[in-house]
Structure formats: C-alpha cells, structure tokens
Length: 181
Image (cartoon, rainbow, N blue to C red):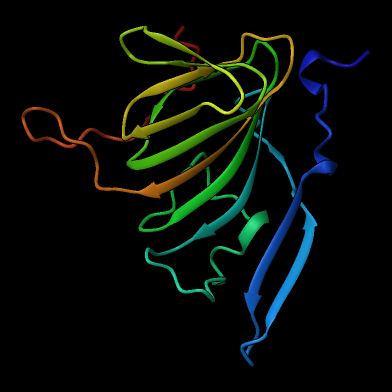
C-alpha cells in the first residue's frame, strides 16, 4: 500500500516552453516536461523550478552555467536567486504544511488549483482559492493545504533588500523545519 504522501499529481501534463534567440538572432523554441522535485525534509511537498535568472535586469540570452533554466533547483532549501529572479511551481499534498519562513524577496504567488491557507506570524489565516494572488514583501509566513485535493501555485520571486525592523536592523531570512501551527 502506498504512503499518503506518495500520491502523485499528473506532472506529465505540465510543459515548459522556452523561447530564445540563437546566435543569428532567430527565434528558437524548445519544450520539455516540467520536472518536479521532492524535498526530503518536507514530505508531501514537490516543486519545479521553471526558470531562474542570476541578475536583474537579466539579459534575453540569460542561460548561464550556474543556473540552467527549468531543471536546476537552487542549492539547499534556497528559494531566492541573489540579485535575480526565480519562477517555480509548488504542489502541496492534502493536509500538507510548509513551516514558517521568510526570504528577502518580493513574491508573487498565484493559486492555480486546490485550496491553500496563508498563515502569518500573529496566527491570522487567509483561505485562498484558485485565481487568488498573494504578494509577499519579505514577510514571514507559512502555508497549509486544508482541502481534500492537492494545491498547486506558481510563485515568482524577485530578490530584494531585506525588510527592516523599526530599529533599522534587517530581518533575517529563515526557514523553520518544525511544524509551528
């Protein structure tokens, strides 16, 4: 019998299409399946790095050796490309939870399907439905999927200067690997 976290989504339906210019200036398109990666410390969570740039503004030919587009996750649990951008999908199993974390970035999150709850440090919760958008500006937050179905959202993270506390000290990036609900 399968473990509850091994229930797969149909990832094969997700396609990555990259258009770019070749050395002659012609438009070239390549497509491939969007690869999803599990995160060992977070059972029930899978993600796909769609595209990462290493600088902003980026060049239209940005496909450097350190970030090779859709299939190269950032090292460790990093979500933000320093001075760059990151577009990613996240899938969360029913009942799944992503612990509280903060990144020095502006995050544009769009829920594609399922139900998702955004949880802030004061305990306030906002229930999100498909099409809802959350913009996070360096704030600590957690996610929970209360529904009977998987939740999938796309996030575009743009590196930013760290948010600052009232005393002017920068708020540090963190990721709590414990469940803090």
